[in-house]
Structures are given as C-alpha cells and as structure tokens.
Amino acid sequence: MKKIDQLIHLINKYQTIIIFGHVNCDGDCFSSQIAMYEFIKNNFSNKEVYIVGSGVRKMFPLFYKPHIINDDKFKGSLAIALDFNEDYRCEDNRLFNCEEIAVIDHHNKGKKTIKNASFCYINNSLSSCALALYILFKQNKNINMSPTLINALYYGIVSDTNRFMYLEKDAKSLTFAKKLIKLGANFEKIYQNIALSNFNSFNIKSYIYSHYKVQGKIIYCFIDKNFIASLNYDGYIGSFVNVLANLEGFDAWALFIENNDNTLTCEFRSQDKPIIPVAIKFGGGGHDFACGIQKIPYEKDIISSIIKEMVKVLS
Ligand SMILES: [Mn+2]
Image (spheres, rainbow, N blue to C red):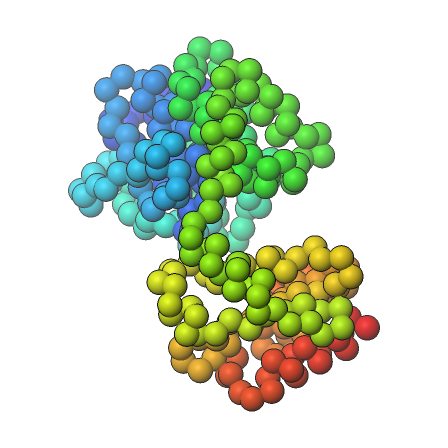
C-alpha cells in the first residue's frame, strides 16, 4: 500500500483529527499544518479537524489562525505531528493524550523520536515538511488540492529553503515549486508575506547598524539591556547576529546581549575557520561556525577578553 493510502486509511478511522507543530513554530511548520488541515477538510467528509499551537502571526492574514480547543477533545482523536519527530520538540503536549499519532517530517530521526507512531513518513533529504506533504499527496491522483493548500505548500517550501538558497542535491524543491506555481500558487503574495518584517526587528537592526564595533577582521555589537527593555520584544535578540554577516573583509561576527540579571548572552559566527573553541573556552557550545554562550557573568573586560580569544582562534 502506498504511504498516502496508509495515511488516508488512518484518517478514515477517526472523527477528530488534531494537527500539531513544533516549539517556536516557523513558516514551514505552520504551512504544513494548514496544508494538512485543508487536505482533510477537502477530501474527507464530516471530520472535526483542528490546528493547535501558536502558528506564525504574520501568516494569519494570508491564511488563518490556529484553533483553541478544550482538553477533552484530545482523548480518542488522531494526532498528526508535522515538522518534528522528537517528543520534546512538540509545542502542545496534549499530543500524548491522543489515541494514535502520525508523524511527517524532514528532520533527522533523533534519540527522542516519538515511539509507537501509527504512521511515519520522515525523509531527511527534503528541504521542508511542506515538500514531504506534497510528495505524499501526489501519490494519489484523486486528492483535491484547494488554492489554500497549494499556497501553504509553496509557502513552506520557500520559507524552509530560505527562498531556494538551501536545496536538495536533485533540487526537488525547485521542481515541485514549479508544479505549485502552475497549479496557481500566489508566489508574489507569499514572497511579500515571508519578507514582511516588524517595527521591533527594524529597530533592533538599526541599533546594530549604528552601534557595531570593529576589531581587526571581527565585527561585533553589544546590545544594552535598557535598549532591549524599551522594545517590548519577546523574541530572541541573538537571532539578529546575522545582521553582521557576509561583510567583505570580515572573518567573524558576534553579538553580546546584556541580560537583566547581570549576565551576557553571546552569539558567534565565522566564515571559514571554526569559532567554536571560543564558545567552549567561555562555557558555551554549538556548531563549528555558529555557536554561542547562553549565560556568562557580565564582568568588566569580559567582551574584550572574548574578542581577544576570537582573534587568536582565527589567526
Ligand atoms: Mn521544516
């Protein structure tokens, strides 16, 4: 039996189906949830379907909001987990109150992969969960794809490939994106929505652009806690480190974020030489070229000591 027919069989067994996403829901995750919702709504009759989790706020005008549902809905329902496969990545733990679980994902299977899933399609060669869904849907010619479903799949692919920067070896994402455009995906509106920024991140960027410092081939910025307090921003400021990326003549870039408890959070990035030894030396970790320190006491000269170490590691 084809994978899609296994999934259809499973959905047929249930009256209530609840669609889950991961913590810090992103464009691919929420798009996949919408695509799955549309798939069930348009191809099955009389199903109660819900999307749970926080979704992505800027996408609501283009699609719709997730649903808010009571705890008693979960018992006896089918859970569909999208864009994650490890239990701790799930945003809404009521997943484990459901009767059966289906998992569709494109991340590597981890140590904490959800056990006993009744249906599992994990393909880590794919750019996005949306593409995994599209590949599944294409296995059955009778599936009805609504305009919203087509747009959601296109959104997920564009968003997780970072607008086609990260592709599979055979560039499947491009092939399937073309098919979606032919089916009517509103690619201009989707691009516009993906590119949409907000005033807080505009202010954070402009702060970094006007407060950066340079030491040799390193560019960095210290972000003052009073500035952060003035923003009313609940996201992670460290994710703005790449505002300083890809500058000609610079080997590495960093952010130092001042916290309210007299500590610093640090983010380090480098171009060609691993910068991870710096993070490790000061009690942090991460990847070779993208790492950081969650918390370090904010003492006098700590930033200059770290920068000195960066110079040493890069030379
Ligand atoms: Mn994804």
